[in-house]
Image 1 (cartoon, one colour):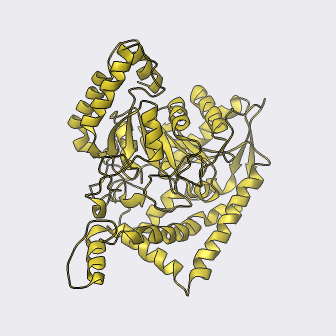
Image 2 (tube, helix red, strand yellow):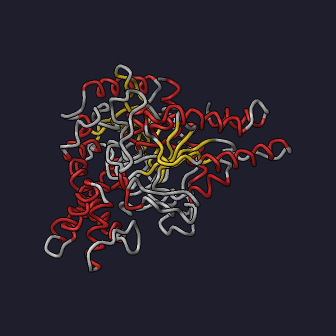
Image 3 (cartoon, helix red, strand yellow):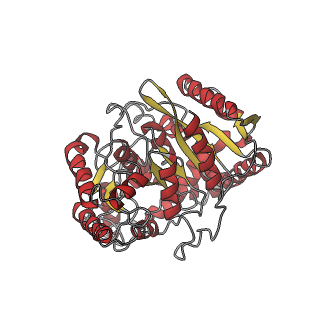
Length: 466
């Protein structure tokens, strides 16, 4: 059921919130052993929240927008009283002492947090294979990856274990799993959603956003979690709330995104989508985002640099599981990190520390920030000419589990078409396009900063005509 159908069903007494949540919990218990989408299932609290909603409905009270809707939450977003591991053994025993801003808002809207979903460790990954709690499988084909790092929320939603989900997107970690699992996934503008209570990876890139089965559900969740938060100084006070009003939408196709390396099945699906939008009176023009070719290189300097700084706190003393071996403080630091961090986290910490070292700071980190500005300027110039930009979400279809683990570069290239939106801070959504066999292809729509409503309007148009 959609979010509106759940709300209406509870309001009309077709079923109770407790019956609904119990059915989802039963499905998780029976089937998630094969998917591994959850690290923690919040069974008792979910049923307790459902009972409170049923009491409101029975008493004739006004039901909030997300009343009874089961939501899976990526396990790097804090939910008070629940374990929050960030997919890492170093946080294996951490219990959140407060709710993240987005969780506080969801609870106020009546949403039920059904579980904490699996992810690549500290959100570092593009496949869902780097969790300390085992890799997540794609419900469309269990031999394939679901995409990362929001592998768990996407897989849980695609498998029918929840009605909506929250992920975090640092370089494509909502949009890519949405593409691989046949879902809608939004990376909001930087600042549109509070990051308070999100375990940081790269603070200037991270953004929380919704995963949903259709565009309307994604918009409903976004409306609930977006807006200014006094506990996050980077959150925005206001942004556009109306869909784009124009007789003919002008859409840009960046030539750099349709070059060599794009899977032919993905390309064919995108061309079919463009043809459908042309028939719906959309005008397409070829544009250039010349510095997007440096997006991966720029991202792979900035992200490790910021993450090495953010992860310095996990030392076995201030935060994280402590391995008290040896006779010195340094021994505790080394053994705690050696046993607590996985291989991908260690790799990126080393890369980031190197980029920030005194001899290389100017050559790498400062230069990457200058290139980042050029990438942002490319988008600013493009949006003077067009209303939207359309690209593939991923250059390939979902790949096999284990296929790219020995080749980090090939794994990083999975984010080729998504990282630039994070570097520029612009909103982008992935929506299901057309299938290649039984596998979904994601269509990415990029819009102007804080114009999420405009993106939703075009996404709904495509959803209607495809």
